[in-house]
Structure formats: C-alpha cells, structure tokens
Amino acid sequence: MEQLWAQVSWWHWDTKEESWSDAHSEDLYDAYLEEMRGDNNKALDKLTLLSYNVLHDKLGRNHILRPDLRYRRILDMLERAEADFIGLNEVDTELQQELLKEKWVRERYYVSDASVEVAETLEGPWGNLLLSRFPYHSLYTVAMTGSPRKTIVGAADLCVYGITVS
Image (cartoon, rainbow, N blue to C red; front, side, top):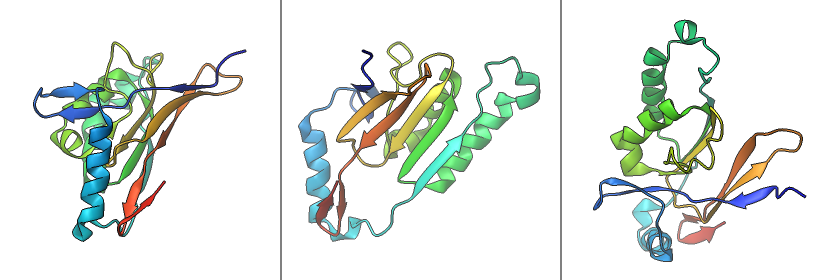
C-alpha cells in the first residue's frame, strides 16, 4: 500500500552561510515562540493568507505566456501582498529559483522547498510551494488518490497575544 503522507524538510535563509538551509533545531522554533510571547508589539492581530496559481510554462507555450515578463510581475505582486502564508500552485523550478533570490523572501519567509536537487514538493516539471512568516512545526507532502501529484500540508504554531495557537 502506498504511503499517502511523507514528512519533508522546510527551509530558511541562513544569514551566516548566505544560503538556504533545511538544517534546523528546536532552538529556531523555540526562539520564535519565546520572542513572540515576550513582545506584545509583535502580537498577531490578523492573519493574511494568499493562494495563487502561477500557471506553469512546461507545455511549449512560452511565446504566449511570456514567463520572462510574468514571473517578475508575480514576484512583485507577492511582495506587495505581505501575506503571512503564501500557497503557490504550478511552480516550476525556474520560478522557484527566482523567488528564492528575492531579498524579501530571504528576510521574511520559511519555504517548503528550496532545493532543485532534492525537490520534495516540486516533483515533475511543476508543483506546489508554501511560504510562511512563521517556522513550520511540521511539513508533509500528501499523495492525491488517483493522481501522481502531491499537495503540501504545513503546520505552524502562532502566538496570538501571548497565547500559542496550533
């Protein structure tokens, strides 16, 4: 029987190494919770979610879809949205790599996949990508019954006015 759920790594920008890293310890997660509990100025009073289908270009339609122009516009729109969680569909490795170069992504987000070599959530020519302002508690790919595709499920604890909410 096929396993439907598989735990995967999540990534953060390592400022010391100046690269994306999937190496974390509980310290990163615990430091986030401690910082949020101790600073009422950082209290979460609203939660912004954004979901966007970026329309992959792997079917020979580049002359129509113009990824060279469209990707820049998508990145600009995502930055302006300042969402707490971003779920992207049909992300190809080219868009993924452009997204990971963005300073605003490196400074503000944890991502579900930052590796082309390991690519756990971008299987095949395209896939899904999650970005979160909060470190993930856990992250899973879930096989979709009757389809070769997978979706991503992320769990994060949020600190709302000093109270941890899962």
